[in-house]
Image (cartoon, rainbow, N blue to C red):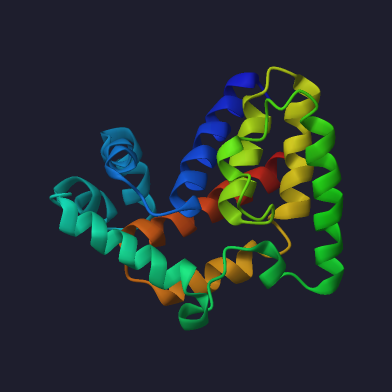
Length: 194
């Protein structure tokens, strides 16, 4: 696998990380509206490109999108969609999360991989995990890049199918539907690369 492929995957993981980390702001929405990105979403979820590009993203629309995010992910007692891996994993699968913490600490000796913005979020938050995989793939160190597959196997694969099934059944929002589908496609691609 070339470093170009790693950096391309890193960009997708970072994009998904941004979508799942918190409510989107005007700057994040502008990035999603770019033709190249919105067309990827359209291939996965019909209507998502029109939703991203044709919606007049004024204050009310951004608040509605934030409300969608909150109802899906911040109030999980309503939707059951916790963004924490530990919510979805069995006790056997959860044992891997302690291994993940050790890997992260080992990789981040110079504090260049873990972003300070995430210090207050739990380490098993989907957005944090996606950003971390992105950071590993963006690394210039080939050995660190190769650890991305291990991180995915430990932190995402054990639970992401259960999460995505619930996400796809819980929302009609084209952005979140396409994001869930993009995440599945990316992880399937990762599985084929092994």
